[in-house]
Length: 123
Image (tube, rainbow, N blue to C red):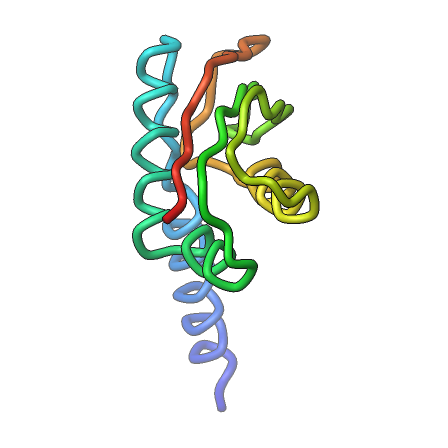
């Protein structure tokens, strides 16, 4: 291979990487927008994602009323289970740990954190 061909290949790869990584996550600045985004993401995850798989694997049936705190980069900072109908403590803990590990595809303005309640029902 010649040097110009290697340079062209390297340029093409680096251009592709920069374009792929330059996609920005939307910035949400209201609690209502964040809550709607999280509600939709959790509903989608319940229907066809990892939350559905986890609930099926651990045979979780019931509901959790969860207080979320969402931080700057769309990560879940805290999860507090306010009410529940799932009797088994290990099952509740696994669900809580999964919810705590979630990260959403948005960002918040610097220094902002939003706290809200979400009801999650598993069948």
